[in-house]
Structures are given as structure tokens and as C-alpha cells.
Image (cartoon, rainbow, N blue to C red; front, side, top):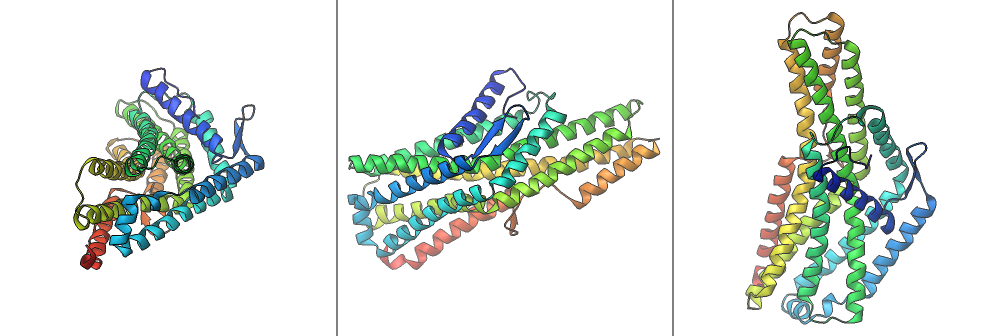
Length: 389
């Protein structure tokens, strides 16, 4: 599943990105599976689960025991000026560590379900989709590369933020920073597993749509089409929708926490910057660039998470639109017409959507609402603490 079927430059980078995510997840203990090349299946390893648990617990412990952020002159001056900012920062630190712990524990707890889903994706790839080239599905390559690039940008952004805001480069600082980088990388790679799985589901649905279009074109020029072909595409589409729903149910809490963390970090970053620049009357030198790059990269990563799910949902809507093209074909065989009707009825009752925590669907509409809501929370926070600004 991780080997690209194309030989172009873009496909090679896509394969390299997928392998990097796989090996990085193995090293950091967030992918507790071994691959059996004989049976082409993943197997959950209790040793890798124990390794990942111990390793990431060590990262969290090192981050907590080597935290020197609050000792920097900038933070001490800011917290002395505004006590609410210090309380909010403490709550945010607890929320961040809780998010990391819950994400990792839930991933280990649900590893059996994840194993079955990944094995089903591998089975679909080998049985039905291995002969299709990636060169035609350009969005698949693009989003895999975007996701890999966003993980790198998040790490670079955090390094710039930490190094730019701390004047004290002690050994304790670098131990804490290294542990923080590895912990955040583990979280980002864990979240990327969901997005990469969604991209694979998108690719397979895209292939189903492509095959449906071929059948429409055959019927339009008078060639015969077997109903069994439509039944097979319906079977594949049904399996892909089941896989997407199971993926959403496994990763819903993790993804909600990740997206919320991006928005919370942006709200608090702007709030602290307002205190720093207005209340403390500090000059806006290099630090404004540090703040801005962190906010922009966080927002880009948040929106990429939304856009991946929107792409899959949009492709699912295209399936219904393609099925409507069969209505323009005259003299369709009765058995074939029944198969097409069954496919259309299935699409009318079930749609490819990612529902998180039973609360909302991940798409553009939800993304805009969350972004606007985070801006409103920033306004509420400024109004509540206006007398101290």
C-alpha cells in the first residue's frame, strides 16, 4: 500500500513521504504494528505498544521536568503584568499534556481496530486497485506531500518559536526542547495516520467514479456493459464507506483535540502578543515575525485537516452525479438498470462523510465555523480582561 505505482518524480516523493511517516511512526512508537510480507497483513505487536508507551511517557516526563519557559524574562514580565495570562497559560499546558496522553492512550487502546482497517485497505489495494496508476490521481500525491510538508513546518515553527523567545540556551533548555520536539512529532504523526487513511479512501472512491464514467461512455457509444461490473463497484463503494465510518469513530476524539489545539494556540498566541505589545509597550522587532509564522502555520495545518475530509466528501458526491448520467442512456438492459438503481439508492441513503464525536461533519462549512468561533473567543477574552490590558 505504501509503494507508489507511478515512476514519475511526484510519485517518488509521495512514496518517500509515506515511508518517512511509516518509519518515523515506528521509531517514535506510535505505529505498533509489524508487517508480514508473506500474507501482506499488519500484525499488532504488544512489544511495540509497550515500547511506544514507555518512550512517549519518558518524553512527557522530560518535558515537564525540564520546562524553562516560565523562567524566561519575557514570560515573567508578562505574567507579572497580567495574572490571568499566567492562569490561562497553566491551564493550556495541562490541556496540551492531557491531549498528548489521551491521543497516545486511545491509539494504543484502539490498535486492534486500526489493524483491521489497515489490513482491509491493503486487501482492497491488492485485490482491486493495484493495477491503477497514481499518475492520473494527482490530488492523492498532492495531499500526501502537503501533509508531510505540514508536519515539517510545524516542527520548524515550534523550534523558531522556542529559540526566538528564550534568551537562555542552557543544557536543561535543550533537553526540554528536544523532548518537546519528539513528543509533538509523535502527536503529528499519529494524527497523520487518519489523514493518510482518508486520502487512500479518497483515491479508491475516485477510481470507482472513473470506472463508472467508463461504463457510461461505453453505453453511450452502443457497447454492452455487464451488470456484474456495476455490482462490483457498488460492493467496493460500500466497503469504502464502512471503512470511512470506522476510521472516523476511532480517530474522532484525537482529531477534535488536535484541531482544537491549533485554534486554542492561535487564540492564546494573539492574546499574549496583545499584552506584550500594548500593555508592556514593547517594541515589535523580530518577535512579531516569530508570532506571525507560528499563527500562519497552525492555521494552514488546521485547514489542511479540513480540506482532506472535504475532498473525500466531494468525491463521494460526484458518485451520485455520475450515476445520474445513466438516465440519459436509452435501452439499458433490465438487469443492468436494476444494478444501477441499487447503486443510486445506496448513495441516496449513505454518503461519504466524516462525523466526529456525533457532533459535526468535517468539511469547509465546519472549518469556517470553527475559525470564526475561535476569533469570537479571542474577542470575549479581550473584553473580559480589558481592564488589565
